[in-house]
Image (cartoon, rainbow, N blue to C red; front, top):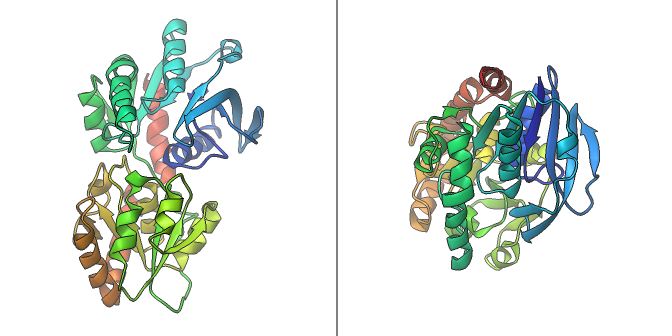
Length: 352
């Protein structure tokens, strides 16, 4: 098959959607021709090939840096030649709409993969109104007209709420061979956060919850909220690649994902594959990974005292940390391995 994937952001930009596209595309490219059409941001090449994935980057602007890219033109799309299937990711990106319109005009089978479980929430109320308008118009059109898959059951429910007639779950995953569970000794108890530093990720709640705990907090990532977060303390190590994330997780005891909204959190899957104990907010599809009290703890988003209580228990109880870590590792390896997920993904594509 010749597969064209429209993704507003892609490598070298980091994020959950970008990782999903990369992990699925590189595996699909072993048996198919795969082209990713994405936004060309500062420092990125117009065209290149990475691990068999052909990448075409279109000039774009970012009205919301790191969160929304708008292509300035779609020149080159009409010259892509014969295409067997088009894939778009996330309903609110202009490039998803462009890919969908192109698919309909050319009568090409089209799969849209939804990653969200709620309307996008920003600190600016006007932007929130705009986001809901996009969901009601362009986003709704995409979900009504495409064949729809989603990264979790929660994302499928949300897609149907916005207009999808049906939806198949093709889970977000983790490379369990890479995140192999090999741990390194370290002198102190270490709590880690991995993700973008935006208000909706809830890092401010984590920084408040760890105060007074006998543990070191490592924060991995970057984003527009970083300056505000640093006022609350913590050790910020910046953004790193997958090897860097694996190295930090290998020397950590607990991962916390205090987000206010998720599709299916990559950081939780990676930490699970590495055998860490996890405390996460019960949002989106997180409870499809974590069973509260069995392989981790789930807490309510924004509840600092509840988060602190669970962390206190885990910091003091090494046996419970090990129990949760082993149980979660088993869940992740059995249910969320990328190689198995992409086999299902390819079957979905062939059925369109």
